[in-house]
Amino acid sequence: MPVYNGQAFIGEAIDSILLQTFQNFELLIVNDCSTDSTERIIDLYQKIYPQKIKLYKMQTKVGAFAAINSVVQKCKGQFIALMDSDDISLPERLKTQVKLLLDNSEIIVAGTQAIVINKNGEEIGRKIVPLDNQQIKKHFAFLHPMIHPSCMIRKNLLSDKDYIYENKYGVNDDYYTFFKLLNFGKFANTEEVLYKYRIHSDNSSLKNLKITLFNTISIRIDAWKNFHYQLPLSAFLSIFILGIALNFIPEKFILNCYLLIRGINSPKEIMNKVFSKIKITFLKPVYFCQLLISKQE
Image (spheres, rainbow, N blue to C red):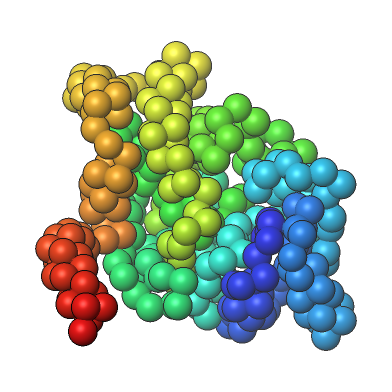
């Protein structure tokens, strides 16, 4: 669990791991130079659960993927479960994924389905991803078909046991790395919803969405060139269309489309936002007139 300035949600994230029905785990938390009270919160948990929780500190801020890489060698278990510090793992998550990996030795990455929640923990959508390796592999050509922080990785199938992520595409390093891992084992997602994925103003992948999406284009081309990934003709067409869209369409509109396609927002929610803005725009002159009248009185 990498964390940077996560004081708002990290307690809930840690609790969700401590409450797992599968208890044979160690929780490695990497504090990536937080400047808020994150470390104080972790220290309190570590004092209560010294056998379960281990805290590691980066000397300089390196980002989530480099922070995870820094502790891969310290992981004692045969599986590495990922976890974001602002999300929630449902109680059966680890048990279900461990069973899936123990029953299928060829699987290198196992993810789950997820509920999408807002900063208040309220459900606002679903992230539904394909289940079997064949479908997952096809979807990689168009969208990331794994909910990254819900994934569990089989350590002995990694090409390098010292790290997981390639340091090339910033917040998109997981997408690029998973393209590489397709060559070393199969992928799978559970049928069950076992994860709560939180959307809020500080989500790194949504802060500069155009850059993120431009990266996905480069990653697909890289995977085709370097990882022997077979991009279908329709994927090249989607890359071309996406490239044009990113150059000419405003980022707010692209964000709403992205959230809709990913199942994070429903069409109803997007229409509510649109009508809310229209209503506010329409009512502004009315409020202004009322203000003038009240001042004159």
